[in-house]
Image (cartoon, rainbow, N blue to C red; front, side, top):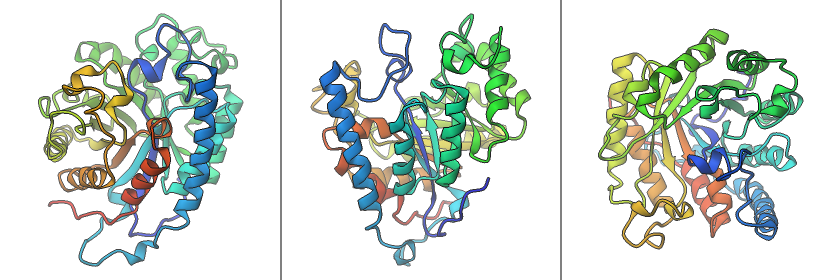
Length: 365
């Protein structure tokens, strides 16, 4: 898709911004997209933006200090880059200058794909500028179309009014086709992120939307991701195996009662479902603290103090368990947004960069 080749010892990396349910889609009680850094008031917003700019600068400096891929130890076999693409979730409006700066930081860190939950909160011209910049940097976009507005609202145009301004659409079907037709021929397009943790009872309505995306672009893959844990073991994604060419699971055990080893078991279960349905698999791994989501008090008994941010070693172990127990096409990290608003954005991002550049074990089988 026009991306520059990478050294074979470093797996391909993908960047996505995955917001959590209400948080990433809209600010609670307001019909408008969440803007990164708007936590509670202007002061925190400004502070977060300053911290993010500093983080971007740090990424450029740190990435330049990484050892070259060929320096990897021969005792740890690595997977060829086409077998496992890694990435991270992002959330910003393409019309914001910081969003274009994020692309530069993401590319500098070593990622090669970006999925942005707030992708469509911009004009058509801004979307094309964003895509052109991504392509220039060697990044591909998995276009964020996972909002339930696409399949569970009477009219989607008011939600994406800036983009709809040049559509002349009167139906949700027409708007869906407009978005796909706008981007399907762009060299930066990887595919479409069509669904995120959709409940099984919504399968029929969701599949009708997924089919419309496929009809508008039969060439690029669709990606669907469900939330899984040690008790569900793929049961949430299974009903949606007929809606996408790539089906995935997000697995976030750190801070919960699930052992980190559950990542491997869930990855194996996911791969079995994908194999049975003739699809490919994707896995989203944890690069955030559950403590950043105050409503999720169920996570652990002494929440939020018990919900720590994964260490570099824990992220590496999760990555290795995912790789050795699946044939995942994508390994995604959640999330750039959570790292930038964490208590130690520089440290956590540096840990993640080290992981994505570390040798990858061979897959079983």
